[in-house]
Image 1 (cartoon, protein in one colour):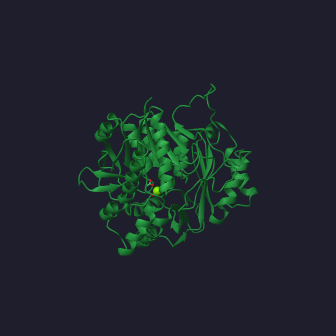
Image 2: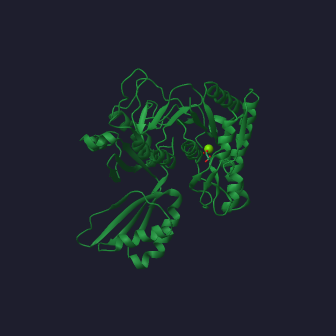
Image 3: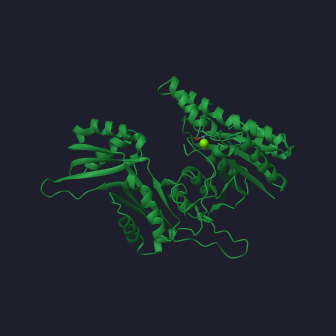
Length: 426
Ligand code: ASP
Ligand code: MG
């Protein structure tokens, strides 16, 4: 039996009871004969609370100090978890990200892992111990300062350690039973996916599905590390995310669905640049201004210009959090770019249908739009990739639209199996 990396999220270790429950599960895995490395998040909403606290003492907290503060959250849970395991009669040692060899670049609050040197973890395992590692943090190679990987970064820590230690699997324990065909908080009849390819999971993650972060899946794909997403509250088998279809326990391959799922995202806003002269270089100047402010954009749509005026409109979506900066930088560039006005709209939602089977199945786009029209939902923007169709709608319509599309593609399960075990969804 090989090495297993298990990651437990904040809702799984929200209180002392949760920590003891997780400790028992870890000990059971160890008793099954595995070497066990555990990555843990901060308890419950600790990270949010620490950020609130920081903002109370400083409007824009210094990046280095914010990282020092936030990493304390994971330190608390790692130490408590190690104590709980010891009191069950098993040896456990906790390690900060830095002690575990998680080396990052020096970008505070959103550092990237550049290397993992888990020598101390390997030693702990060789002594027969369980190793507990604080998620979401590392140490900068250059500045030697403590860094964090960005919100939700513990999953990436887990996958990175699993890859560096050549683990059999990286198990991500969360408050739902796996990856669902839609957000189970919105669609009661969402179905648990047994297996999903990295490719589809990446599209779901970048379309707003929150169960796994894009960066974590990207890392797993790069190292071909299988992820098993499952609940720490139930004993159920979850969702396998990997390259190759696993074989079923009873023999035969798992089936790949045409459509993997419906994702939605209400965190974006739409900017419309009105009255742009329809001539070469205009779009370039607009998006240069946005890029120079380090803002990532998502969908872009340019209208056909009106023959009479020679003017066109360009709309794009971007994270709501960057909205005001984008407007500022466009206002500044107005004289050079030449446009009439700007419109800003944060009451939008993006709904995406994802599935590799789309490539070879005609009619998916038509059926998607029919489902939306049946639900009386108006489409404002459309964009597609090979395996995804996304639309922008009014934010108010999002839940109804997701449910309608989910039903139209036959994704509804017969039973209400989508249970949300914990978490405040904060
Ligand atoms: N505690 C951090 C957060 O809430 C990291 C994580 O949970 O993965 O973002
Ligand atoms: Mg968290």
